[in-house]
Image (cartoon, rainbow, N blue to C red; front, top):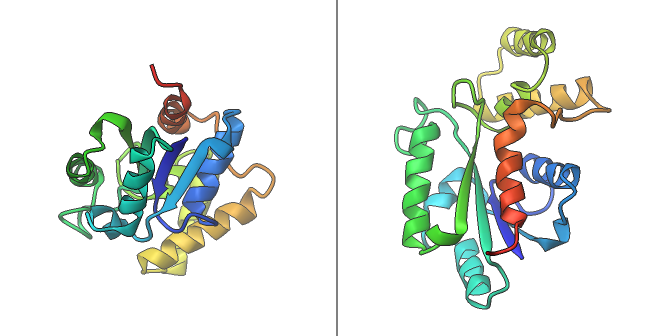
Length: 190
């Protein structure tokens, strides 16, 4: 078994949905995955997180042998310690080291690969054609949504409505890193 830790809960969140669709697209066996919904991003940086206790126990019992942490980059200007790609990576690497999981873990930071900022919706938006991307961004700008959470929710809804039959273009190169990390996660131990 492998573990994937992501933001939100372990059932129906945008992060979980994307990962499951990508696992299916790669013809990997989803039944080999134990999903851990960590909740908000800040929970990733709490050593006493209940999910970490469960994960460590399952690793000790040899039920889990590899772990992938999936976390949003967000924006450094909103959080100088955990915001932005580099800060997220650096702080998560510290936690992984303290949890003594470095040898079996990998990290994927969800963002727009061009600027290394944002979240899952930023990654998705980066994979659609420029004309459609401009249309969505124009709508978001003129709608004047200011809240980050509203922005994410609205962006997700617009995308789902605009592309109901092809939710994600997994052939886009911006998904390559995540596809690679998922494929490696499922590879048998050497």
